[in-house]
Length: 495
Ligand SMILES: Cc1ncc(COP(=O)(O)O)c(C=O)c1O
Image (cartoon, rainbow, N blue to C red):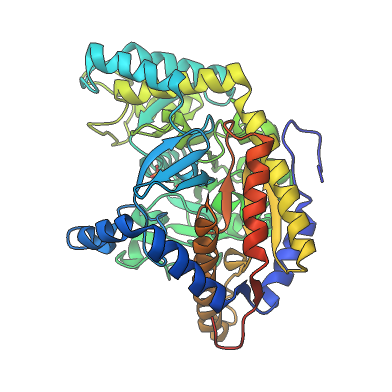
């Protein structure tokens, strides 16, 4: 299974992408309608009544009833009251194995006491924010720059979205070029200019409702795992004033849902150098999930700029930051007077870099390092994936399971493996209708896993943490076994 010598397992990318090609060509297999109806009746209706009533009330004042895009809506969202280690508990007292992990930040597991106690001590002493310098700003920045050679300096921001926006500003100032090329299908937050090529490579502005197209006029996308496509676009941009930056998740778009060849990042870095663009690595998910060196350490590359989020605040709020070479980070100097003589990028945030996010981030990183948490979480990811692959074989399903360390994928419908080809625009409505039909089934599968006591990310992604043990992974596999036993080919029109 391991393609290259690394501390973390790396999938045979060519084989996985071939399997995903086959999956999207195959008819949809999903939880059968009668089994889904039984889960709705015997689990959600019978055992989640308090959640249901709470969500009904919330719908009156919160659009859709929930605040998070990652909350399941089918058949209705559940309300959670407790998160501890590898477990989540809902308001009705039901317990779940947690593979959502708050969307990725909790490599140590939920609410680790080693971090919580430091946060409580800080709150008792200083409160959550002062708007002025706190020593943990320095401690966190130093820890990160000691762990990643490419991060000579670090500026903390409020979120990954903000860090992506800041990275683009810096790249434009540093190169004096305007154009950005992002990897198709990738999510880099929800800013206007990056609401482009979301989820489906080649989808351009089609998912960017509410954003005027001219705002994305300087944004392009390239196809995952296709260096020739990237070079074509870089060359084309040369005729239009040059490229400021190429932005990508080193592990592939959507946390590696479309996995990349192991040496792909090195190829991108080389092309960036050749065309005078900055190479921006979005490590919002991979930063510290692949050890303190991040995915850039695993792939042996040194990005010009690195975007942080999630783990950087240890699961606490205010999780964002930008790091990179000194010459670029100079554009981000803060403070009222002094600083460099050249232009500064306009960035800020009243609640960015609060003592609470810096303390939590610093101690989370120290704990990850001290306990080998990233490696432990990755071992659990390997065990989970191997077990899922066995179950897929047992039930002869077209599903695909693969992982990069603690980031695991269970693709049952392959929604994110579609792409749009604008030279055949008549195919676009078919792609959009297929993906929305399949998305619907992914939600059904997510609901079935939930009813069996397993919380996933959108029914297709699973983050493991160091709080997992082999026994807990085996419990999860038993739950997947029960769901897969009720999966079959959906009748035409049933989806
Ligand atoms: C790769 C990547 N970049 C950026 C973001 C945006 O981060 P945030 O949600 O903190 O704004 C996310 C969020 O999931 C992400 O996965």
